[in-house]
Amino acid sequence: MNNKNTRSRWFAAATLSLLMALPFVASAQTTSPLGILVSEEQNTIDWPTVNESNDLDFVYVMATTGAAITDTRCSFNLTQAHKVGMPVGCVLRYDRHYSAQGQFDNFQAAVKGHHMDLPPVVYVVPDSPFDINVKRLDMLLQLLEQAYGVKPLIMANQQAYLKYFSLERYGAYHVLIVSNGLKYPDTRYTIWQYTDKEKVAGIMEYVPGLKLHPTYPLKSIKL
Image 1: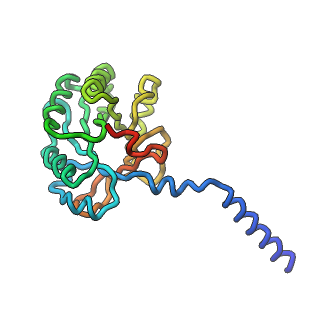
Image 2 (image 1 turned 90 degrees about the vertical axis):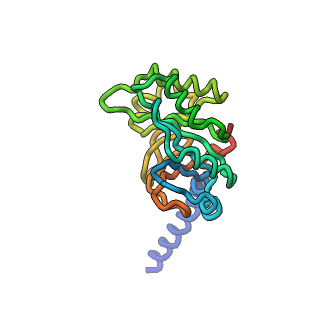
Image 3 (image 1 turned 30 degrees about the horizontal axis):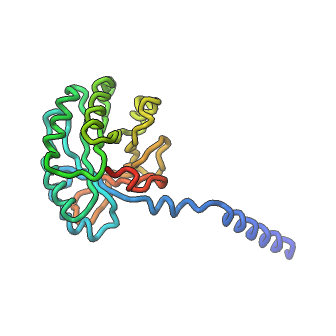
């Protein structure tokens, strides 16, 4: 009995020593800058409450889809988020059916007069089983880089990333990976959309939640 207790105490002590020797990564994960992605789906947002009642570091605002659609809350969200002092960026949802120039012009018209603190994001949602028209997408990425002096982020789910954006030609682009769930993405990423059902004070509807990779401070992607 004594030998058994001795072995148990030795095992507990050895386990504790091993755990103390391991790097503590949880704090790096939990202290990653947090953000949200808002659109007309959230209707009217109480931005002062969002800013004061939540531990948020940045926000992305949906701006346009393709060459003809502008999010109806884009201007309001940009104005109000800036008014309360939140760093803001905008999202263009890419549509392979429209020209790169047409989508760029639509985006520019939607954000005209608004300052952006973060690089634009191009959200690529493949029309399975169709191709995304890589040539057109590359032209759009180039137009945005020329306009803002920085490469836009590419936003995609893990399947689209592996099919299109894991290639070396996109290695210099930051990636906003859409992988809703508790499991960290298997792909490289700078920003992770970890849920599409975050609850945020000041917003009645669910909102996509964003988290920066632990190795990327927010200032590393600011304009």
